[in-house]
Amino acid sequence: MTRIINFFIYFIILIGSCFLILNNKELSLMSILYIVAIFISCSFIFIRYYVYINEINKVPIFEYINLYFLFCYIGIFFFDKNSIFNKFSIPNYEFAVSILFYGYFVFIFGYFLTNNLTTFIKKKEINYLNCTNQETFLTGVIILICNIFFYLIFNISNLIPGLDQLRFPTQLLGTGLLLKYLTISKYDKNFVRLKILLSVFFIMLIILLEFISGSYTLPFINILLLIIFYFYLKNKMNLTILTIFLLIFTFLHIGKYEFRKKIWDENLNPSRIDKLKVFIMTYKNIINEDKSISNILKRDDNKLQRRVFHSMESLIVVTSQSPEYIPFWHGYSYRILKSKLIPRIFWKDKPSDKLGNEFGHRYNILNKFENNYDNQTSWNMPVLNEFYVNYGIKGVIIGMLLLGTIISIITNFFKYKNKLNIESTLSFFVLMPIFFLESHLSLLIGNLLQIYLLLFISMFLLLFIIRKTNFK
Image 1 (cartoon, rainbow, N blue to C red):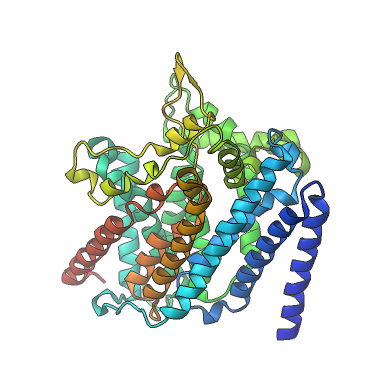
Image 2: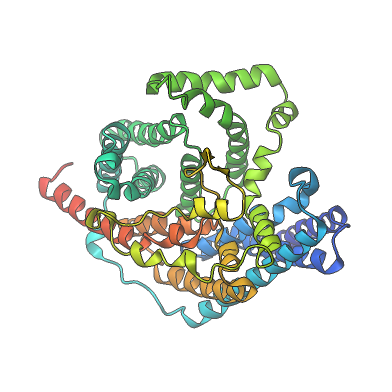
């Protein structure tokens, strides 16, 4: 059986490599070799994880970072890149690919070198956080009820802006706890059907409320992380589930801009019920008008591809303009990291992280005409690209080496055998979003420590209250 699996892995990688070579003949031989090398490495690492998932008992940040590089950087080379990004020359692509190659492989080197040296690192399990099935269910429900009330109904962010950073982490933690209850609980107690229905209801509700607000990135990441968490709990991956997710993602993304245009009209101010009706009608019309999948995809006009391959597009933009036309930033984008350690609730005039907007204007992506200056839209700057923007090739090599080292230490430290411990769920949903390296570093990790500590303390208090009230 192992031989068959290995043969299948090698066959997929061989076919993919051949296609990349044939589809990118206009690039130099060295650039093609760089692309194929990254593709082989990313594919092998992730497929190996898929095959041996039951032997890897840690948060799979590293494996999904490889999937991120495979889809968001290398993926464009499986398509007609010139029709998707028609503004770049062959030299632009080739230089960007070389930067990607150096950055990716020093990241891999840093991870594996550190991984072999830090296998002894392990966080001690806190017994008080070991939960029963009932406690897992109750904490998940309470967290989601509080999240819906404070953020989606009361909108506490307008009153206390500093609390906004807890909105998404609490969504993830609450839905993750209920998914854990659904996945590993033994359904042998009273009212179990009610608990199952409530768990499914709250998970679906929190995701639907985000969708009808016009937010697509957060609910999609939530769903993806729940799928990954399910695989993590079961020690088994299901490609059917991933395929269904990708199909749903593709379909919903196609109607995103049409739906947003309808509900974000300032003169309408629709209610949530009205937004839900518009949401349903938008996608119903897409199906009725376009009929076939091919027509639905054409309707998108490559917006989906440009969104998915933004990381590669961004890298080409910055490597083609810096330092020849736009000088390196020499660490400017990392200065705000100093302020991230202090929660906004304790610092009234704490500077806002508007680097996404600054990146967009600096590289002439966003509108900056005097009468129509866009100071709201963000243009994501992925971590690898940000290293280049600040320090060039040296920044990419040193930065990605350190990143690989840090990821290795984190995944070894937060490794739990007992997945009923609530901290295993907490650490998963606080740390796992790191894999999506499309945001700049301060946005990705700036609030990580304080969010972890706040949720950690909150879990202690919540469990204390549940146990003291003896709620059963």
